[in-house]
Length: 258
Image (cartoon, rainbow, N blue to C red; front, top):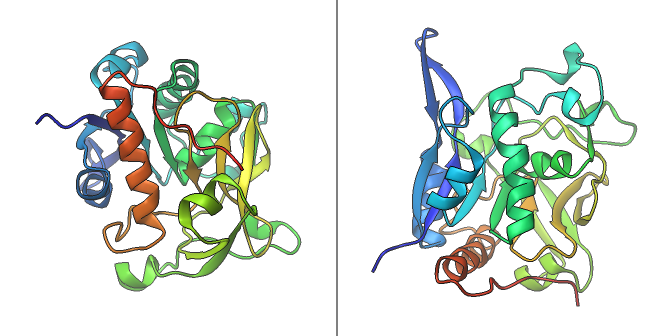
């Protein structure tokens, strides 16, 4: 039986600091294949090679991955500063219109970290370049040293809105997650509902109100250890259900607040 296809947004890298590549982490592919039950397909996120209409015809759903480069601040009306970090304008040119097109059609996507931020920016929201510089906020960045297990370790709680989408999906009002990001939501975009927060008030989970499809997005990295993690599994399972429904021509299950 043919599995539905999830397009995984790739990031640009250089091998040996000279050979340009588009690549996606194997943990993304594992989460899509082993938990969501779909076929992962790496997408070169560059408008020189692909277009949004083509991607939407080929793929049934999309995983908006994390990545070291940030969304360029010009996309939300602010000048570039050193604090905004590295950028990938080619990825911006694919993912931001892709989010808007998926919302219009009801095609499912799951946003992770940078993908979470892309959803907000695509809908007119803004980002803060460095969350840890805000009064009362913690350092959410990835630890610079240590093993992969140590860097992706569960480091803070996320509290969901009582009776909200994530509360009902997880079966818990509070969960533990990893944290590997520097930027974060400053102002929500049109229709963006923040449904989960870290202890310091940083937005960590969102969905798009009134959207006809699956729009759940998170600031942490649920793709890590998704098979075993009790928070990651229901998220990717629900995403897989939505993608299968779309591929079968059925109305995808829309998760809403109680």
